[in-house]
Image 1 (tube, rainbow, N blue to C red):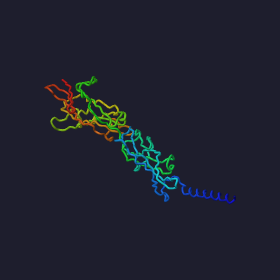
Image 2 (image 1 turned 90 degrees about the vertical axis):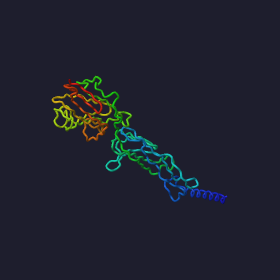
Image 3 (image 1 turned 60 degrees about the vertical axis):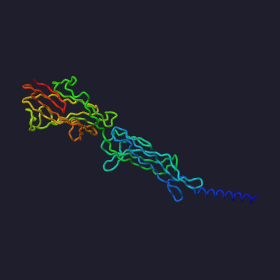
Image 4 (image 1 turned 30 degrees about the horizontal axis):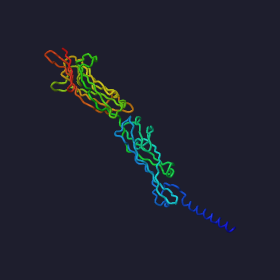
Length: 342
């Protein structure tokens, strides 16, 4: 009996030792590393894919969409027979930031307005400065929910850079039915001597004209100086630099913030004194400019980088249209209005 009991104990001991040897070769369940013992395993790092901007022109006040390819990660998995094979993870976390190129390097923006997941993100550009280069930065990591329990190192990937632009004035158009000489009841000393226009415009990206809150639109009129010729540009009240200088500022600058989407431009009749003028001539530019953090002053100077929309020639005449009868006439390109003095 003792011999039988000893035999049973020896058999049990051998089973325990065998089990110990078997478990000793399989101490790791998963690993993101490739080792000599991992026959047939790739043990690659996380492939997060490169995020990319999915929009067209990037305008302030808009949400900028970014997309990113699906994440993948293949790591080593121990099978029950102590061999290894590739297994793919399926669960990841992704964090997003916006970076700006400043001081010769890329920096995380202090003001963050971006939200997303591992498929992509949306960036609210409202609080950012036009003219600078921006890019999206995504950080991808694996999780403990599957695979090798999150033991891969997380990875950063960056989109290409995109320049943020301010909304622009577009489709600047003369309103139908204009110009007018009788300005719809507008009280002027001489309605029939005033030439009036109305213009409309849109925004290059706008769902809302309020996006033009940093954009100024203006007219800029400069008058030619005295020149010889027939007829000469001359008025008895001029000081030698241009005509009608006692009544017209040169240059004439008039503007407004562009959020209204329209404005009127009225060329009023001028009083004329002394010897009659033949004519005087000016160049009129319609222009817009964008500023930061505020719009350029409505009557701002050329340092704001104004973009010219249209250019027109304005001529003001005082002329004898019949013997002993004089009139004032204004012409803007091919449009005109007159007022008879007598």
